[in-house]
Length: 408
Image (cartoon, one colour):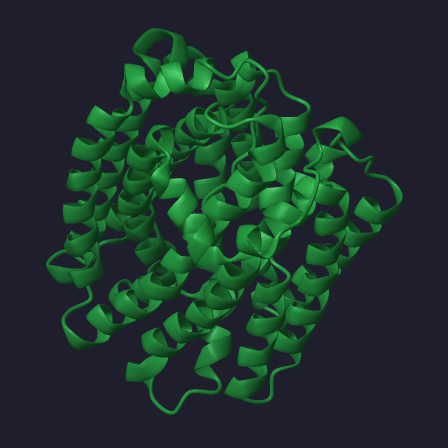
């Protein structure tokens, strides 16, 4: 059931990706402001998720994963239904607010996997879950692109319908994974404050370097996620169907990398080798997209850059998820999932606006050049940070079971 819900979750989240700028375009005053408005909508969504992520994470530690998954799914139903109804930019904004305030499904699913996975299998299992999200990412955008040929609103309503299916499956079929003896004893106000959560995470030596490196890699990928549809529209004049099929290809890459290659790469080059190699691949992908936005607006370069970036991100993120989850105990998995989810949401607040502003005010390639610089810094930080100290910190907690929120 976890497999089905994970794939449906990612499919639902990604159905709307190819059509997002086309929906927003109907309600903004000018073409030049499209990137800014797309960024603003995603920033507001991320702000809401940032505020509630620690609460939802701790809530899952206290009462179980299933209630959080159910609430998140029903919230997505309402949020995407409002977005599909539209009528004005403010209705779109309301839809993103509702969906953001209930965005706890993916962190809870990763925490769920943590509850049922032994420590020694964490990296591989997170890779398998990443492959499942890849299947969803493959199906969702392809479906969204095809539905968009009928109406740009139709993929949004399809997302709401998928969320409703997830809610019903979670409510009536999904068993609870967190055993009573592994639940936290109480829920305190300090534990659910997002800034207190950040302070606690960075105070822990075994997490600090990895979290900093995670920020450096997540920001450039957020640039890409929130801006690549606009780049495809402007630079190579693609429609929603072409964008959707390319996003589906990203899902196929995720399946191959996380579901197949990771199990061979990890024993041979180790966690550090996989992470650094993944970062190098992301840097190459960002360079290709920067070239598309500046000097060579060719579809082939765009596709190659997108797929290489996705391959590197999938390998590096799944491995870092496993390392992070090995560093905390059973009763902190929801806390860690909430903390990393809140961190991703904080990045989601800043990155879309920064990417949209750079894209509109500087150049179409500016977000990708900045992302390339940050990725080089990430290679240095994580190349040093994934060391014996981090591994020993994880191995010193033999009772630990994993759970970490994935990328956005």
